[in-house]
Length: 140
Image (cartoon, rainbow, N blue to C red; front, side, top):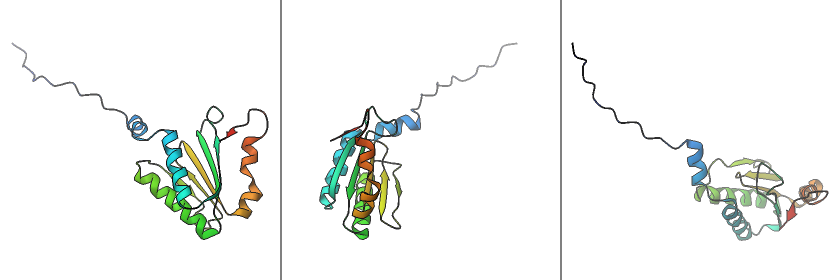
C-alpha cells in the first residue's frame, strides 16, 4: 500500500511581535521631547524645565516640569500635549490629574510631563529631587 500524498504546506512566515512593532512605530525620545516642548511653547506654558534621566532611570529618558497659570490653563496644556502625541503616533499615553488640574501627569513612555499650578509646583518641588545629590540627573 502506498501512503497518501499530502499537499505541501508553506511554512508560516514569522510575524513581528506586537511589542516589537509598537516600539518600531514610536518615534525616539528626542523627537518626542522636541514635539512636547514645541507644544508647551505654543500653549504658553511657563518655567519649563527639562531633566535628562538617561542612564539615571529605567522608566523614561526625560522628565519635563512646567507650569500653567490656573487650573483651566493646566488642563488645556495637558489636553493639547496629549492630543499632539496621539496625532504623531505615540500610543499608550497615560494621563492622571485632569479632573482637578492642579497637577497633571502625562506619561508617554520616553518622556514624562508634569504640568502644575504655580502653588502646587512650589510645594512639591520635583526639580529639587532630580537635580540634587550624588548622581543627580542633569537639567537641560
